[in-house]
Image (cartoon, rainbow, N blue to C red; front, side, top):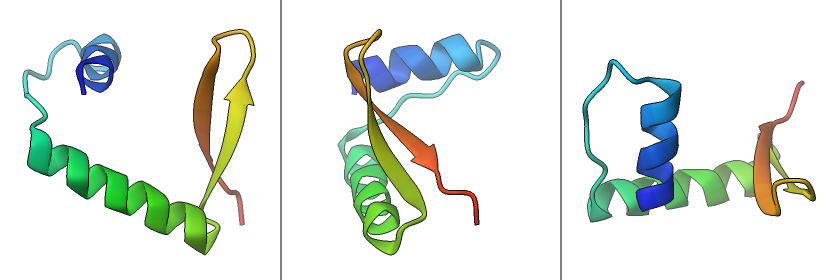
Length: 58
């Protein structure tokens, strides 16, 4: 959650909001649903040593 909050602050420094446990569960459910439905694709970013989620272009 901390990493997501930090990234959000980097992308949108003018927005001041906090993510909580309920937000995490909602986002997690949405991500797994989108992966299963083929709307998101999971890849590995070797340079950043992390998992990336990318929107699937239809």
